[in-house]
Amino acid sequence: AQSVSQHNHHVILSEAASLELGCNYSYGGTVNLFWYVQYPGQHLQLLLKYFSGDPLVKGIKGFEAEFIKSKFSFNLRKPSVQWSDTAEYFCAVGSNSGYALNFGKGTSLLVTP
Amino acid sequence: DTGVSQDPRHKITKRGQNVTFRCDPISEHNRLYWYRQTLGQGPEFLTYFQNEAQLEKSRLLSDRFSAERPKGSFSTLEIQRTEQGDSAMYLCASSLVGGEETQYFGPGTRLLVL
Image 1 (cartoon, one colour):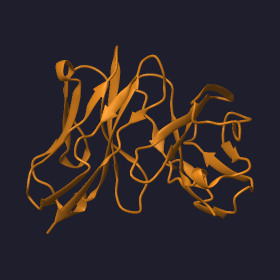
Image 2 (spheres, chains in turn orange, brown; image 1 turned 180 degrees about the horizontal axis):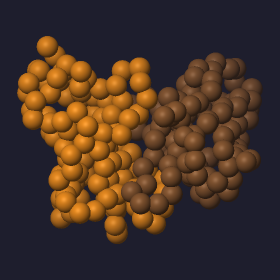
Image 3 (cartoon, chains in turn red, yellow; image 1 turned 60 degrees about the vertical axis):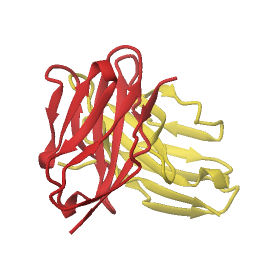
C-alpha cells in the first residue's frame, strides 16, 4: 500500500538551530512531492514542491528539501529556524496515476526563543 | 488573489442530523478536492472533481457522504445522519490542470458531532 512516513512527530528547537524533518514514502512509479505548513490558526500553505529536475528544491522562508530517489525520501531542511517557524509541517506525495495527495501524519515544530 | 474559501468555518450538530459544507475554489481552477483531517493525522483524501465531474472517490467516503459540483465552480459536501466519528476538519483544495499541478487549500470546516 502507498504510504508516507514522517518520523518526527514533535520537534523542539531553539532559535538559530538547524532543522531537518524526515519524510519517506512507499510508491511505485513517478511521484510528485510536497511540503505544506500550517501555522497556528491558519490553513495549509505550500512550502515547496518537487516534480522533476534538480532534486534540491528551494521554497519560501528559507526552507529547502532534497529528493533522494534511492532512499524514497524528501527531507525538509532549514539552516537556522526562527520563532515564527513554529507550525505543523506535512509531507505529501502524489503520483502521476492519480490526483489525490497522500499526506504524512505531520510534524509539530516548536521553536523556543 | 482570492484563495479557496469554505463555509461555514465551524459546525456543531447533533448525531443523526444532516450537514452541508460549501467550498469555493480559486477562480478558474478546474479541479476541486475534499479531504478530511482528524486530530494528530494528516489530511486524508475523500473525493475530487474535474469541472463538474466527480472522478474519484475514496473508500473513506461512505454512502452517507455525497459531494457535488453542479456548475464546475463551487462544491458542496453533505453528510447525512451524522455520527460522532464524523467529527473532523473538512478541507477543500483546488488546482489548475497541467504543468506542475499544485493543490491550494482552504481554511477548512471544523465539524463537531455531539
